[in-house]
Length: 455
Image (tube, rainbow, N blue to C red):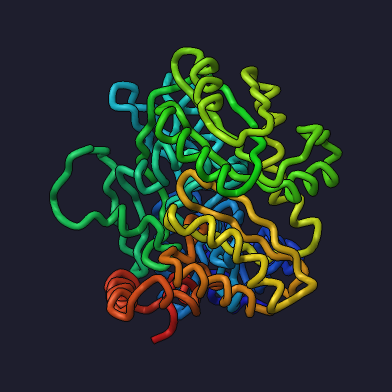
């Protein structure tokens, strides 16, 4: 799809040569990480500043061209790829961060800085960052704000919105809002930063962020715990949450998932006697938490076996069983990734029911479950389905709704879940969503085909 020469000229007036139009060069920006969602675009544009991003938005608005903001393109619900031929506004050149406010424990960074980059800057200044997940090396701060990313530390520090103290962003009109003072108390009206966080690029294009940092907890210990059954695992997770204020992560992994990771990546199986379900936990403190961790595990019932790791290399080995699982599943073909959250009281029933729900619709499909059990977030991955066959998706989301859960815990709605938003948001809420979008993006050019269903 060739780009209009006038549009290309005007975009280059704003960002110089940083406009890709060659089909071979733009191809990698038109598909998501899973390979399930693929689109097309006439151009990928790379602004290097808020002013350039605003200029691109203004040009596209005047030309009636829709935009998809894109960060590290690690999204899993089709929210950051041009499924309808939109221009891609890639924020990767908005890197760099300001000096850390060491006294206040805050940092301002460009939207293109990776999560790993924020973690590194924080550590160099004697602080830490409260958000972490496996795609840390490529996921960007702008993308994590746009999707309100969660990850493995939500249990202790909360999601991205809990770390967000301000944003600089371009509205759909081309106007710039900038609120980056980092005031912890600022009771002067609407929290636009909190509103933009999680809006998936439908209200504004995030260009800079102000983030809260947390005190470092350099002493760490991790444990992989083998348990007799699901009820034992959920019960143990509850015990550990009550007894370990140092608990940062509590992940659930089922044995088929561990077997798949070991097969794909050539890892040694962790236990001589496989167990149906495992918990991977990590605690962190300023003093060695190993004894406290071992004592807490010892107080739990139905534990079959435990591996405790205190040094960094061994902890990394244990985490591979969890963090390589997504990549291992991807080797089986593009998966349907259904990231959901359930009330604690409904977790066991949901986990037991999901494989039957899937097999009833598609007997040859495989269901892979894992996730952040400490905060009720289960990742349902289904392989063996056509990429465009969403019957299983709908059935799983309906089960989630019946059990009082949410159809999206941390990856957003994107285009993949858009048609089911009514299961988690009322008609009145969706009407409010549309009113907000009209106010901040009156021409509807910012990511118009994600999150909000057509009226």
